[in-house]
Image (cartoon, rainbow, N blue to C red):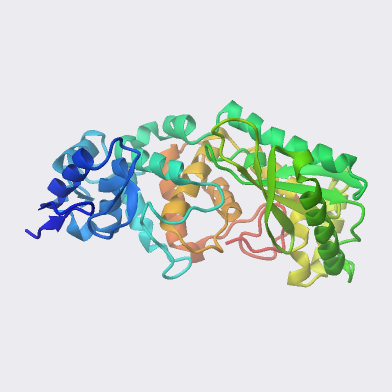
Length: 413
């Protein structure tokens, strides 16, 4: 058996001996970071064995006889079996899901974007996951039985009321400031993103705030792009000048062609800062969107080129938000779990949250459990070319596979 050397001293032994030595001799608590003896990457002590399993599976000598999942230690494998993650003597049958680990492993060959997967729990996070969420998924994979998935997600991934109130306070501060500002004529504010849709992840979520202003011309105007850049320049300048009067600590951290990106730190102790995308848009739908008005907007979009239609996304955010927000709690639980999967297993940045949300909605059936629906979504993603979904809630025709319920001309998957 190959020998291993501690990343913090010269101690040598088997892989398990080195891991146990590191925990006993070099860290004071399980949250302290320590170097991996195989790659020197620093990870929390409590996650070291999990890191080795995901990044260095070939070094693991213990394997589950039911699903071949690798482990550093026998006691990890025994817990994996004891918690019902696999049946040692029976094959999987029907839609019953016995192993979340197995699902995450099999979808490491996700083919929607070739060569873009990484089954490590230490991969870069996406818009609304962080290291705490990654730690949660470690616990989820190792300890949660599929039958308990919905309860676990509700308890550990769903934001609590305090966090939602904190985010709402950030939105309210920004909205009130710009409604009083003389630089913009604000028609309405719309809170989008995962927070507005009700699919936020605990402790870290994206806030998309769309400000509809009168200073922008109609979106189909030839001058819209230039006018939008001009108004975004003014927006950024206003935020830089007045940041101390908006929030406790506000910083402009970036800019896109559609938004100014902010990081807002409130007065609440130990609260992570909130990342906010503040978008500007022309009001396409008016205060009370009617079926006739929506039809007019979609006809207008049909006459625009693909680049010009991109500006419609922010203008239609209210429809997108409401479509997801009205879904059942079970669907939102699946969406949260899929976002965690995306952060851990997919590095392709073009796969955004909204198409995944739509796929969860399209897949869900009332007779399903959260675990079986999650499996069904992953299987569809592994054969992405066969996905074909459309909705007729806001329009009566479809021009592309999975166009989305709010933009019939925009392909989503």
